[in-house]
View 1 (cartoon, rainbow, N blue to C red):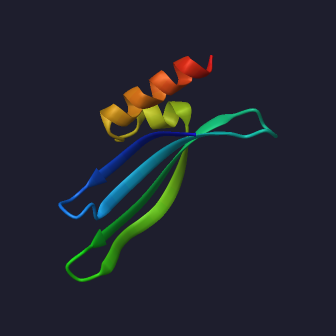
View 2: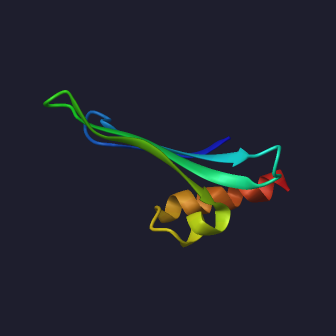
Length: 79
């Protein structure tokens, strides 16, 4: 479930998505951050990837505060 998305740049060239993922086998919830950043003037990808966190790791990370708040709201609505 996507709980937060951030698009930056005058041409929307930097996109980040945060998803709450439930692992049916372990019963754990994790946060996955996926990003795609590019230089639109050179048509070149400058950053592309994905990283998974436990919920606690995500809340303690350097991730944007508005993403952390969105996660807290998503967790409240799931309960």
